[in-house]
Image (cartoon, rainbow, N blue to C red; front, side):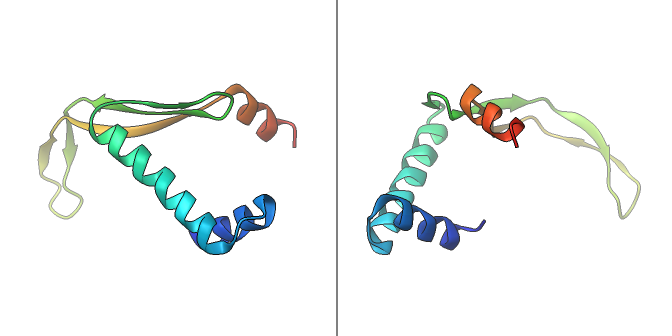
Length: 92
């Protein structure tokens, strides 16, 4: 499902117009983006938690040259599914 399909589905399920649904989804994405960018977490009980975690530096190979190189440490966004979401996925 892509963003357009998600907006259409939200509109159908909620009774909101497509424009209202798109605005709500964009707002949600903006809030998550802002919160994670500042190092925070977003917890939606039963659905899951969006958070930032540290990825350690590591050695890797350049696929073109085969040269060994260091991939620097960085922060990455992660999502951990909540219990209700895990149950819904596993019950199918």
